[in-house]
Length: 130
Image (cartoon, rainbow, N blue to C red):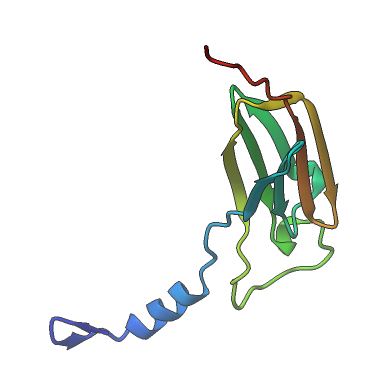
C-alpha cells in the first residue's frame, strides 16, 4: 500500500490481519408458503440448540442465538488460532409475518443444524362486494 508516496512497512501486516479477521455472521433464511402453510427455514451450522431463541413480537418472528468458536465451547485443550475465517458470534434475524398466518399453530424443528418453523395459515374468507 502507498500512503501519499511513502511506503508503510506495517501495511503488509495490517492487510494480513484484515484478511484473516472474522466477519459478523448472519444465518441465511428462506421464507416461502404453500396453500396451507407458511415456512421459515434457516441453516445454523455450529449453533447449539441451547444457544438459540425464537420468539414473536407483534407481527415479527425473531430468531437469535450465538455461534461459538472452539475455544469458547467445551474444549479440553489450549487453542492458538493462526487464522480465523469461520464467522462466529451473536446473531439476530427478524422476519415479518403476514396477517393471514396463525401464530398459535406454530411448529419448530431443529435437527442437524437446520431450523424449520412452520405456521398454519388462516382460512381466507372471500368477501363479496355488492
